[in-house]
Image (cartoon, rainbow, N blue to C red; front, top):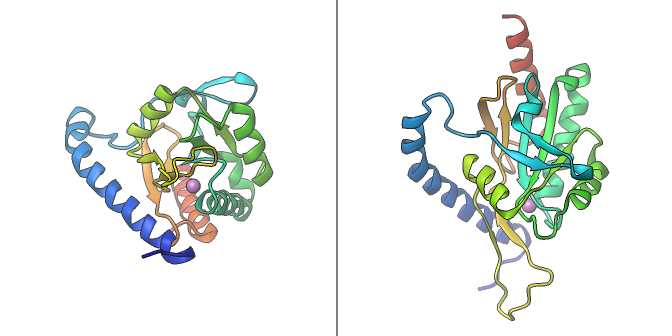
Length: 206
Ligand code: NI
């Protein structure tokens, strides 16, 4: 049976969510034991535009929206980046405290320059990050992100697609994971903006 459009997308999404749940089940207990306060997220060193090396430490003091994807993505990634941009617009001046990061899970094609040009086309405030295959695998594992190259029946690989989980993670100014926004339903700009507004104003009134 061939699935089309939205049905195929939802079916794929279901598989990815299932994989995420299985991964979370497999990974959480061990990591939770080692680091009780930080189950998702962790240190990383990646490469931004111009070859600039950036670590998680560079973003302390700011709220991070961390999203993993790739620039050749036909649907979910462009939609999500557009929604992140709209969420920032809705936050007004509070958006200055928020830094969106787009981390590629396709470092083979997404060089620092490719990913920078891509994210800037959505919003100049988004920082695109790439790295070696090992660096990407490391940060993806920390965020429980599943990704894999799609195999095509004809063996072609030139215009390959990637399957990947598509959560937007909220990380606090202290570098600790706060919550995530689930794909499709939970990533609407209003949802992201209202929750961010709540967290930012709550933390600044403490
Ligand atoms: Ni995508």
